[in-house]
Length: 208
Image 1: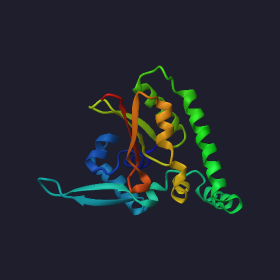
Image 2: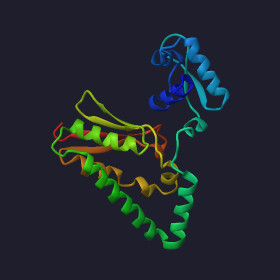
Image 3: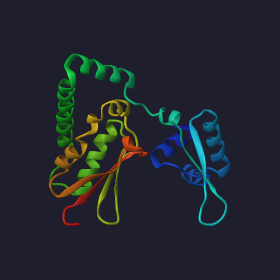
Image 4: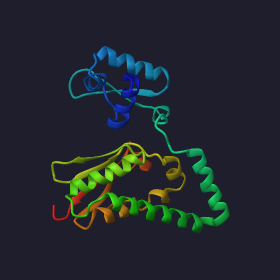
């Protein structure tokens, strides 16, 4: 992955960043980072915003534009939307619900094969993150100071389908709860379809 692609990847994974922050992450000079950012901006892949800090002059934060996000694949979006429309036409909403339910059962079964029910909560979340990452969600697990664990999904490879039919992600919370076990609670703290930059699930040990 070249420096240009690394710059886009870091902005996708970390959200808005200054040139100085990106320079440190890329191990290049601030001038070098600015060149990468300006080149991406010229291609329409980035936008920037000057944010006023508490002291000193405003800092310029860079983030992906809609075209920049589109560089990260949404699995065959056009075909998926066409298939959803066809299923609705042929079988109605009930038929689409059956299709989604079958997908949910398949996903849950696949996750259960990868998650050891006797492992620690962090290990279980890590296993789930690996599974979701393999599906294109750019997922990772992050331990928090309060003992909870975040399942962070920086990308949604089925975003077009989920936007068209939000039932595609209606039961993710329930699936995650079941595969992670009764010793924790799962709640969604950020949601892409509600205007968030990503989807984040907070997993809290019972009794915390």
